[in-house]
Length: 436
Image 1 (cartoon, rainbow, N blue to C red):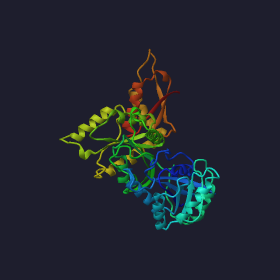
Image 2: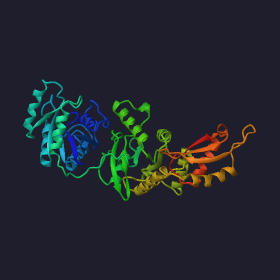
Image 3: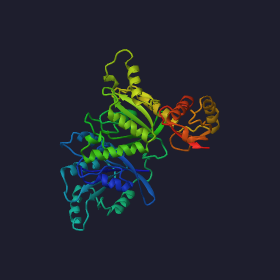
Image 4: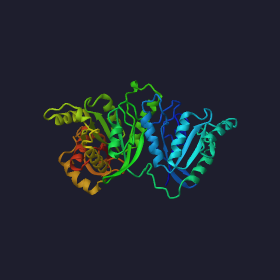
């Protein structure tokens, strides 16, 4: 499977075309220039052939954008690793200085280039497209990414220039565990992603809100294989005023809903604040496994037993779901980065564990017989049988004669006994009481 990079200056419609090719709203689209910053991968299928597509940020030079150099670096990486390039320009504005600069870059790359003129919605605009022959990149292909006209001919040309035996590029893999890195803005989520991958996969700056899209990356190192998803920082609703940030937060929430394990990152200096608790409660509500990472630990003033006291205070704050790994890291210094990986793998193993029914009953029924549910109005509850349900997260059904008399305190007792006898560290457990 080959890789095709979509490049061009800001606001010519690269993300709109990317969404159309991959068949979903994976990249945020807005009239504002410079929305996309990181590389964004997806898969496209055309005429029975499948290939990967990478969306990039707008290529600029000497602009007011503080992310200019980082975005330019991401574009150059995308061109280097691609097998073909879709160079997108806009019909109405003509050839700009940025277009000429990008044409030089793609020409030097020696990669097959498909010159795509976007926003050709009517026949009159077709005449505006002919000026792009002056770029010297061969035939032009006119499209409208918004309504899809011309994209079929464009894809035919892309398939024609793609090499048959290109190296495969890993896209999104639904069969692999999805690990989401979530948290408030500027706690180090993209830095952790880059540290784990060992490359500048995502743009990192001190500016809060640098990451906008949720960026999925295939990870296969040190015996671990999963999809690593970096997300935009989530602030309180009252703090979100821009549409772009609203969509970024919505993407982050959707990532949590689709993830298997969430790595919740917090800042050691600010501790577990109200917004961190909101994100943690969102993870719990969606029944996802969780690993808590306390970043910037190197900047925290320490005394004797500081780590132990800090962890104890955190677990009290997280109660009652406090059975989860807590890792203290410094991502910039790469301290305990591998501990995060090991914790994620262990928690995912717990999350996907299925316990045989016979083993469950042999372990839990003697405990229940020794500590039965409290009698209610002179009636005794007898739990005879339990089994694990075929859900994505650990859930158990207990069958008894009077399920309506089993109250929440006893359900918490059953959950604690399951945690003590079977390792479910980092995983939520759901208890159902059913009529036998």
